[in-house]
Figure 1 (cartoon, helix red, strand yellow):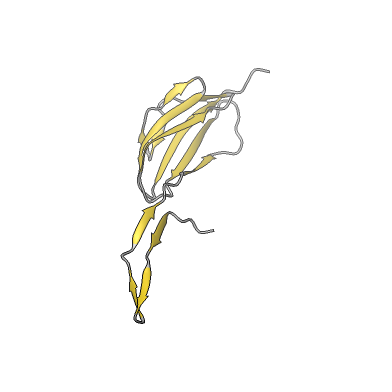
Figure 2: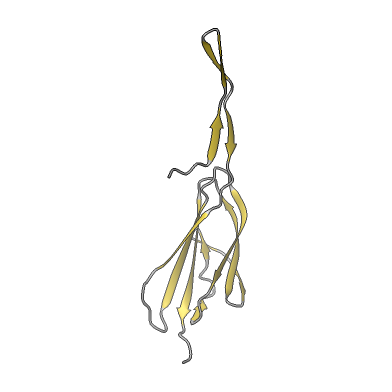
Length: 126
């Protein structure tokens, strides 16, 4: 299925055998972004560091501003301070309980925002 992010339309009439077309009009569709998450290793031991990467893709032809992002740190892991980046630049998230939050300031039309952060695997008490 092809992604449609803009509707283009024209009208026409036929007058004395000649087709006369209107000016084209367009409507940009405000589409929700897509979100994909990955981790740098499929297995880990206590004491290892995991790096999570979240890619937010703006499939719309309009920019997105002030997009709230949140991620829950899994039980048995501890967020590593100063490890959060947006598009490779350091950024400062909020941390409330086990939830990491950040407002992505801008994702350009048909652009992406790449967020990364690290956690320390602590394990859990048995």
